[in-house]
Image 1 (spheres, one colour):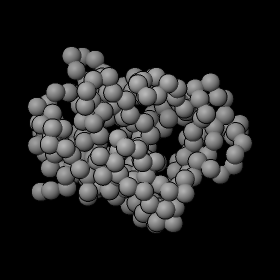
Image 2 (cartoon, one colour; image 1 turned 180 degrees about the vertical axis):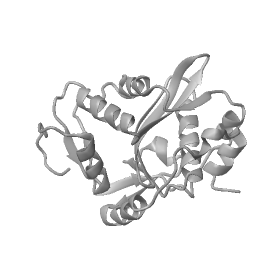
Image 3 (tube, rainbow, N blue to C red; image 1 turned 60 degrees about the vertical axis):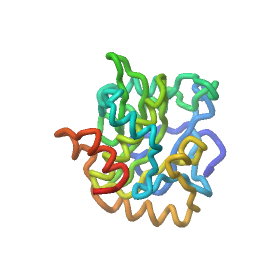
Image 4 (cartoon, rainbow, N blue to C red; image 1 turned 60 degrees about the horizontal axis):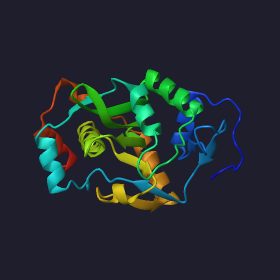
Length: 223
């Protein structure tokens, strides 16, 4: 953590993007916290895009098209879902400043959602920030079995198809490790980050449509 005190100065979306470009991201202590902390972990979580692991049962769920997966259709509903209390998470770090800043990034085209819908209802999803060929995963949620997992598979497939080089998860968790998430030290992370943001990638390459099999092949980095 760089700077233990709350940052009460005005943080603009442009400042936020510059922070991501040097490996720093903001968090709040709670939804009621008015300040933000700048975080720079000694060990950084990443999901190697060429080594993403999908369990057999999850592959079957993706193939069955259990969810209608959409992109960037309801940012506010996704961040509401990520901020809500859930099993194993009684409170959230997403405060009003986080909501406002990331909505502004969304409006600028630098923040994206991958959403899992079923029967017309949003039941899971994730959001993150795009900068060059890097994608910084921020948070995910699920209200139905496998909803957030399917969203993550679709995210990785989209990133691979669009030529992305880095998927940053900030930290590693048991949930992410099942997909192949690893930790790298700050020095190695900086090298990966610099190479990624110096390149271009296309988040919308698949907007013309892709089948569930296309998604699985791209996520698994196979042809």
